[in-house]
Image (cartoon, rainbow, N blue to C red; front, side, top):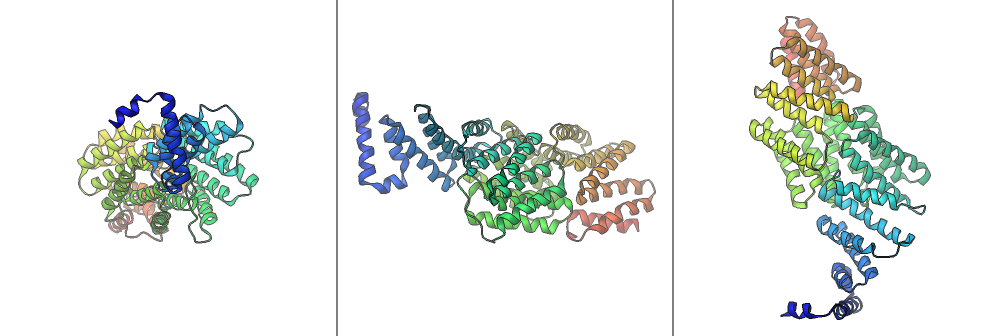
Length: 478
């Protein structure tokens, strides 16, 4: 009956009724306006009063952002943006629309993914709305948003160009937070492109700038905590450089700090990286549990941005623990889901891990096809973080097929790339595989001379599978 009565009202009386309800709530129930601004936004929208409706939808969106309720926040801010188009085109309207897009962009990254077309659309519109009066906070937020889209799409040249723009902004702004962000963006781009030592330098710089006071800064409504994010990326760089213990410590520190902020996307990312290290490098007994925790957290909070990457790691961990076929299915499903979001970042690494499982279960021919795709992707995008490993895995697959000469060539190429990148772990793996080929040819002395110096360089991580295997191989070689 209520619905029927409401539906029978003419448009003007209905609008007047909504306007009166909105005014009463605003004047007599200020706690409702503060805690449930979406209710007032709804009434003012139905009343045809765009200005107050936009303001309350904005408040509702910001309240959702503070609570990491990203899905409902997207709905609130989308309502506001739809309404703002009905206002006259003025500089003030553009300022209001920019503010809405900056908040919406952060939520879109979490709910739809960093590389999703809608995420790109939101940040591109935000860039168009930047005027001469744009604040430093607004400029860096747009730069970070655009960088993240390019980065996750594996458009690394474009991402690096945006990172350089951010670095150029830092001295103009005289803002340490901008400098920290710029170093993080450059460090992440260098990491993807295989410049691991330079990446470590820039990420360490971000960590120092952001965490020097040993207190976790409050995460702003526009961006995440640069220092915590940099710790996770730094862990990612440290492990292939040969510093396993430091990598684990950085990842754990990032998770602990992220949890204290209560920032959902940041916590999801930190959990994912910690799980990735255990799964990808096989050094943690509880790797399956760790990546499963990351997946569960992403699902619970609907953080699509990292869910598929975490699921891929779950597949890697399953395969490492004897469930090869199940692991392959999980990995393939995760890769397909990421591809639908245009998330091409890490594709060479994903293809490489998938190929490794196929080789391990006696399907090196399938592995070679996957590795050719991975190498092509790495060359096309410039994502060379995993390049040495791709050549090593290709060499091992060729040897498994009986093409030992071709396999040896690929292993030597892997060794060359690893040395160029100063990636000691990749170098150790390539040297261990190549020394096995030399040993089988009856050249144990040359094999020992190749593997021994690489192993002797390490100062930590001696309980990891890679160092355990290398130590056993050296024992056999005498």
